[in-house]
Length: 304
Ligand code: PBG
Image (cartoon, rainbow, N blue to C red; front, side, top):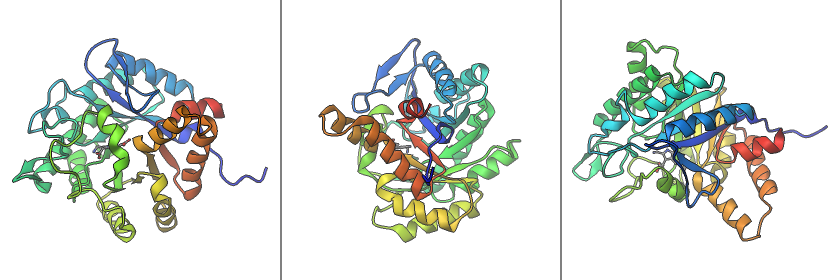
C-alpha cells in the first residue's frame, strides 16, 4: 500500500538485434535469453512482446555487408528499415524505436566516418540525418541517436522536418558514457571497434557535470526525450536529470549490467527474479520513467 515505486511493463523497451536470413534465432553467448533474429523471427518476437504489455522495442541491425561509408545504415532497403516495415504491418500497438548509429555498419566498427585515425564529427552528422529519415520513412515511431556526435540532434531534427517527419520524436542518448559495460552488446551487434576506442566521442565516467551539459545541449537542439546510459552505475545522474528537466527520461540498463546478473545467477550466487526486480526498481526509483532493458520479457511476465 505504501510502496513508492511501481514497475509497469509499459515502461520497458526491449532491445532487439535483427540479422539477415530467414528463420534465424541465434542466442547471444554473453547474453543468455537474448537472440540475433532474422526479420520473420523479429516480427514474431514483437507480437509476443506486445502481448506481454511491454511498451516498445528498440532495433539494432546486423547488415549483410559493412563498408567504410556505413552504407547499410541509411539504405531504405537496409536491415532495420525492412524490419520496421515488416513489424509495422503485423504488430499494431507496440512502439518501434530505432537506434541511429553507424558502428554496426562500418567496416572498422566506429560510430562515424574515420579520417586520420579518428571519427570526423561533422561528416558523420550527414549519415545520421539520412539514417533517421530512412527509419522514419520505414515507419519508426521514435528515432534514438546513440552515436554521441556533437550537433546530431539538431541535424536529425532538421532533416526529419524537411522530409515531412515533423512529428517523429527524437529520443537522444544524451548522457552516454564510454563504458566497459557495453562489452556483451558488441558481440550481439558485431560492432566492436577494430582499432582505438570510443573515448573521443563517448563520455568520461568521471564527469557528472558534463553529463548535465550534454543533456542541456540535446534539449536545446530539439530532443523530445533524453536518456542516461548505462543505468545502475549512473543512478545519481538519472536522479539529477529527473529533478532538473520535465521531459521524458529514459535509462538504458545495458548489456553488461544484464550479463553480470545472469552470470551470478548461473553460478548460484544471486536469485534471478529478485536481482532483476531490484535492479529495475532502483532505476525507476532514481527517476527514469522508461527503461531499456534485456529483462523486459521476464520482468513483464513476473509483473503480469
Ligand atoms: C551503438 C550502441 C551501443 C550500445 C547501444 N548503442 C554500443 C556502443 O556504444 O559501443 C550499447 C548497448 C548495450 O551495451 O546494451 N553505438
